[in-house]
Image 1 (cartoon, one colour):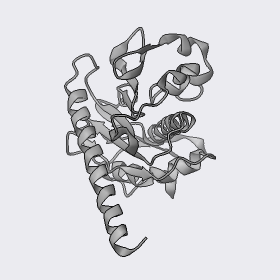
Image 2 (image 1 turned 30 degrees about the vertical axis):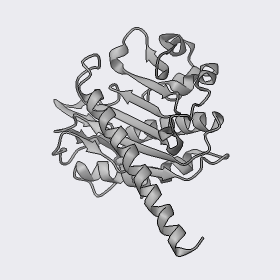
Image 3 (image 1 turned 180 degrees about the vertical axis):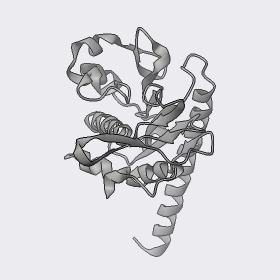
Length: 248
């Protein structure tokens, strides 16, 4: 590939990324205004295959019904995945966009939508529904672990649905102005204390997308943690910390 071809390839990649970012922002605006969802802090995770922009690209989304735990909300990672009580709480249904997964008894908690184009949109209002005293907070490293687990599940699903194109992963936190970070640390004698610093000074945190050129066949937690490293650092920075303690 010569210099001219390289420039064209980079320009095309930039154009595609910009189009996907436009789709993401449009969806975020819709989610923020969706009165069916619980109010308060909301996590949105988008996984967008670049091929999703092709109107003729359709994945075999019905195959996802073979294991509905892969379409659980972000909050419901292990051990919920092996608990039949939680599995029975979920309802998956086919809709115009593809396959929708919700908690039947309380759809306001969020949803996971697998689009026929291969895009996964996961919306969760549970994980940020906590506080430290009377101040809303992000639950520190527990927050990170659940995001990692969910991303790992969703990427694994796309891999098994034979998505071969690069995938853009976007994390967004909506309605988080005033949130702090709850950081639990070990103290002498084995006691634990929760530490907070600053609070988030804006309504939404829209993290920059991370592009995966190809989903690894040997996909694992370490790969996802490295992928989300800068996102987690930025979120901790927004609450006054130097960075995530998970990467010390």
